Length: 259
Image (cartoon, rainbow, N blue to C red; front, side, top):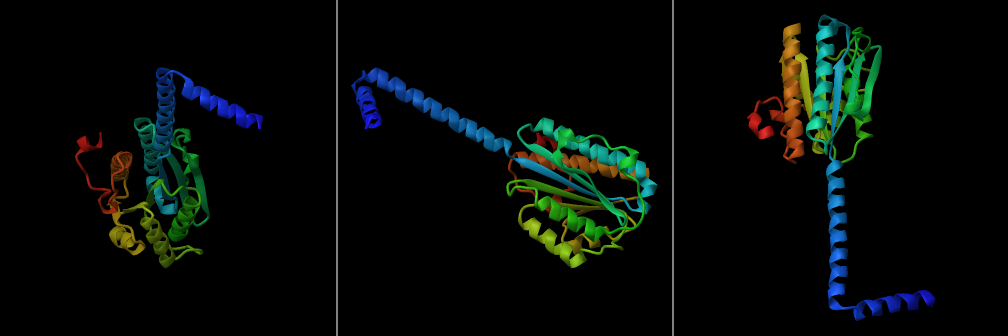
């Protein structure tokens, strides 16, 4: 009863106050409300995230371009970090998985890009065969369990060989996974050496954007440089809430639009 009476008299006192004071109180409350609204909008803006999922072949045949691939992966990490600096309200996260028939190695597990350290030769030691479908299936499944629906996911698959040793996933299962995640807005790219039918392999898995390169140092380096430029354009589109067209990921555009 005392609490009720107190609230009643406070309310009465307020309406008995001069109108100028009432106006000041209302304006102050409105200002506080607008401030809270702006803070909530800012918080929503910082919740935008780009998940960079990189699945890299570490089978024996990749030893020919081991050092260049290692340098290229480090370039990709640097690009993600630069995008974090350029778009500070859009968080960049990295999952890097390498694979051969002896192991699937999670080098970075959905970590903030700025926490990713450069890779050394001990982190990438090619050997054994190519369980391509297992690597893709496991990576997609793992990432799906870690993300939010509002995240923008960019999946990059790099290989120099065809599937030859998977035991858990087959082509049909991988395509089903990819199709499902594409419906959720994920972007998939497939990069392979020119001894492969890269376009055919990508099409079989339901991937619209693919690129082939020669298995030598110069072409491998150029491929990673191009992918970094495309990744930067992708992030610029995400920052502007633009629709991402998978089929045009590797298509060059006017750089002026990306500012």
